[in-house]
Length: 213
Image (cartoon, rainbow, N blue to C red; front, side, top):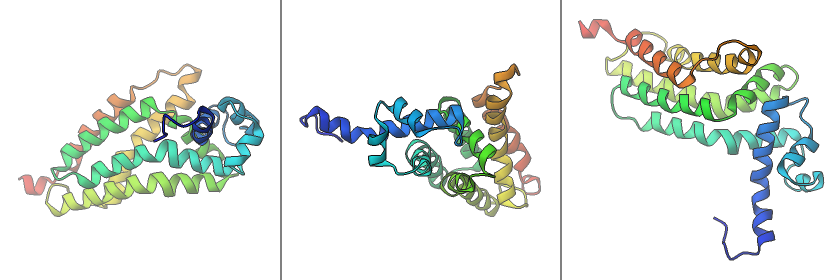
């Protein structure tokens, strides 16, 4: 935490990397990676381009910081909830759906996700960072939770990693729909409601009927 007794210019300088990351998140979401200019990010952050280079050398480095500072902490929070949950998988799925739905609705992560999908061919490092720092963590944690639930007899036989992907996929589709089709007039989806409804559907579909019988 910054000391309120510090001179104002020092506090401002310490805050600049965070302001640049916040500005970059907005610019990437609006314009995509290729079209985003360092001048745009600097202008949005209220700094000179020269000042931006004091903290980040390349646009790729800024993207890594966006993922690490603006998006990953929220993903890690959900991962921690999954790893620490002691109860039935059904309770966990409802809890995670509620939190994930709100995050997808409130964070500008959708625009960045759309950017990664659209530009991964030309900038594979974007996809690598997105996968390694975000997707792999959530998919892995959910896979472990489903495997553990199978061990308790709660969940039907099947590949737990595939089940995990089935749980995550509708939220990704909902976000892509919002970013791609809603702007041209398609009726948007309520993402928190979508997450909760899908969780209930999966809870029923994953039940181990043999044990229940």
